[in-house]
Image (cartoon, rainbow, N blue to C red; front, side, top):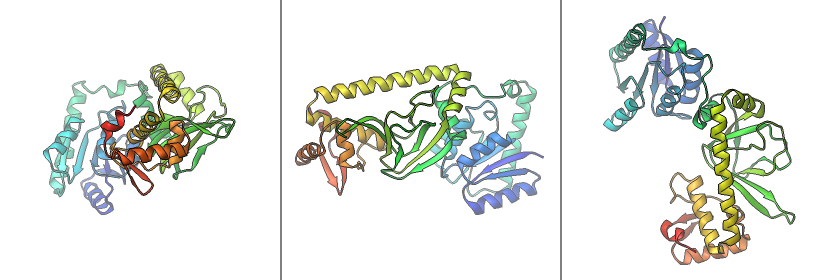
Length: 349
């Protein structure tokens, strides 16, 4: 029987569509969201995938994009099933590589016809020798940071932290390398007087937590969630194997570490030579760009965290912030900061 993977978060529609397909002699596998659907596609390797667009965890566009990067799944016919009917939505789906696009509500005939036509096309391509899926390696090669992050998403262990939760402390053993899927994280060290020195600020889609890629060494900094945060982590043992087997990923990680070191040096120079006003302004800009989807969204971070990244006392930061508010550059909404004039903030010396 032809195997169909149906990815749909609406329970009623998912069950009704699955029943409709089963009555037409298809073997149906159902997934309630994009994240589970992605794993089911790689596990079951269906003959065709029917996928909704607007879903939790991963939307349909993300599912298609990730499947297209894996040799075992990139040639599986993919059909979008969605209530989004704008031409731009259809075009986006097709540009990503979808084979068809069915809008809700749909008829039984439309769905069955679309599936059969996609299967027929795949069969013809295979007969013509244009589908070389059997020639691919048993394991997909990871060639880039994006491939590595997809590996984290697919096989990593999930962790959730509330705002202000400590993820790990300086001196604890580093068993995992983390990818942020939601939220933001601040890393810091304490000096001999107990003052925080921020060593890193990480946003969604950033990797962090690597003290060593080859040894189980203690963490050299403390990591704290500065928003409600979701992480996926893989063990150092797993990562070591990946690096041994995928040399292109090693080069990509070297580039990432080089950028991180350069950024940290620039931050130290900024702290050493810039004025308090400049450090405060740059810190607000950094947080606005790192943790907000839009720079003008409220910055929901404590004054202590902002001050530690700026490398100044909290009281000094608050006084400088008050000066910015008086000039109409920023404003406060409760404990949150809103940037009113981003260009003026960038021009502060």
